[in-house]
Image 1 (cartoon, rainbow, N blue to C red):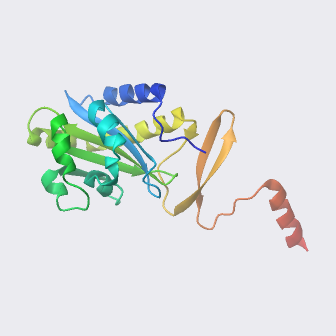
Image 2: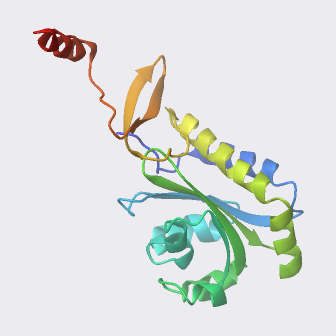
Image 3: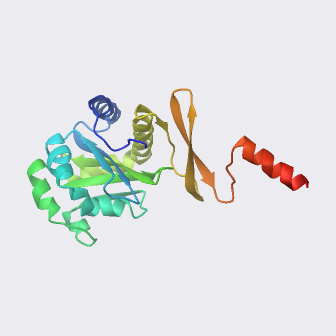
Length: 210
């Protein structure tokens, strides 16, 4: 079984350094990279440079299950701005912001993508210094760059866990995993596509001949 959601020191340290290095647009910003399975919300992973909140209280107490930001991320939006006022109009527990306030987590912007393993990956940037207007301007100027950072970060996380994985393709509902050297390759199986072993295909062709 693919181990995509556990904290591993080598992976956590590598990912945290990789993401921090990409965010040159911000002099200072809180970030999280999170991964949740759309079919099983128990399968959740979050990495942040604000570990005292996200990797302790937040994850230990499974706050992602009622976090309005996570709920909105899994709804299909590619990116969105959020704060307590904006999230009060959505499902979830907005009281989470009262606890998060002690850690400086008040306003942010989340980017999302869906992968072939039925997961949603999220890159969230949280204002740490400066005015909200300046923060949102930086997001607008670098929107495409942040999307690329999320994609590269997600691909790196998957590779470090021994899987090659890309964003989901239209029409893909299933996937195939096969071994290539020391790497497990994940590819989409499109609707109407038949996957079978060589022996099985040979048997089908043989029978069709009759």
